[in-house]
Image 1 (cartoon, one colour):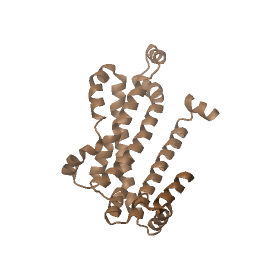
Image 2: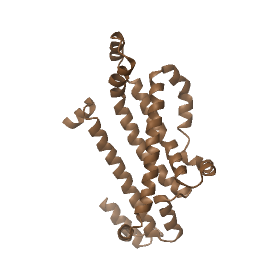
Image 3: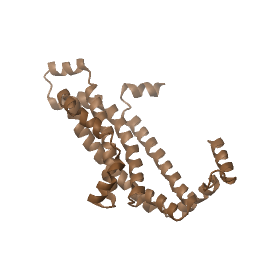
Image 4: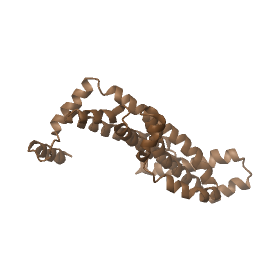
Amino acid sequence: MVALLVLWHLGASLGGLGAVPTPVEVGSAVVLVIASDAVWEPLGITLAGWAISLVLAVVVGVAAGFPLGMNRIAYRMSVFSLDFLRTIPALVLVPLVVLLYGSGLQSTVLLAFFGAVWAVTMQAIYGAHDVDRVARDTFRSFRTRRRDTITLLLVPTALPYIATGIRLAAAICLLITISAQLVIPAGGMGEQILTSQLGGAVPEMYAYIFLCGVLGVAVNAGFRRLEALALAWHPSYRKRSAA
């Protein structure tokens, strides 16, 4: 990282990177943006869109993935549609979403939700598929109630998969939220990047890009930590802790 920063500084100072500012100028712009309180309102808008879309993706993904994973016939009938829909880039739907909902929070939430829901859905399906057959047959032989089978067998088996899907969805929601705010624009950090670019404030533009990167790293690290805490009882995580 130090070598990359040095190369970046030398290239920008000598003019080899065009209009790209030096790391010192970007760092100064980051400090000025934070000190001027100009970042907090856009950050709040971005986090609001991210959180709403993530909650919707988790709820819908789990609700759709569990039944499909438990019923092989339903999964085979829907697998083509799932594979087709999850390959569609969310930003392709920008014209349609803006036409229906305008350039507001609803549009960014819908786009981020569409891009992230498939990660949770597919992980929920994989988790439901991974139930041990011996354990499932044991539950059946004891004529366990369906509710207990779901809560005591299916959910504990699928939780590691769902946790991975939620962590992936969190990153996808953040990426699409910021990207949508750039394209539409709809406020937030993405619009600040676009506004700084159009205004010729290149160091400020890179400052907002840097802050978006820090936000992404923080979100991923936070969800990894939550995943480790929530699944500390699972054998795979106990092995990691022991190692």
